[in-house]
Image 1 (cartoon, rainbow, N blue to C red):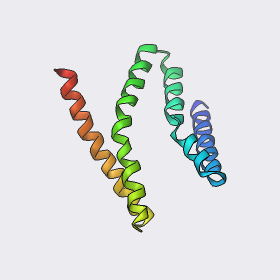
Image 2: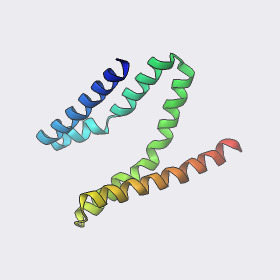
Image 3: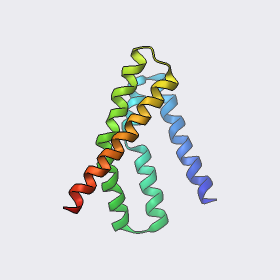
Image 4: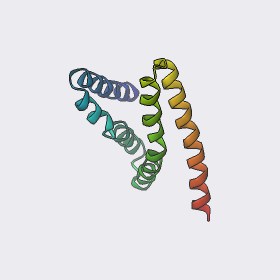
Length: 114
């Protein structure tokens, strides 16, 4: 039952953002830019663990991952405006983001251990 509720709440949020964007693109963008997914994930995580220290650690790690995720929002509109297919644009943007994540994680590890 718990997983069903998680899926339902998360799905409703995604649908609300999508529907808002159809009516007003800026409103949809604002809702999507809010850390909605993070808030939901943090809430579920805390609910499951009831551990404030671990939850704080998750929030810090999310913070670190925001910067490398921005590459997605640079590459995707660039490719779409140059008439690449949507699937190719999403694929390349996602792959580039994953690559930047890996590099960023390695850099963070270097700084955390020294």
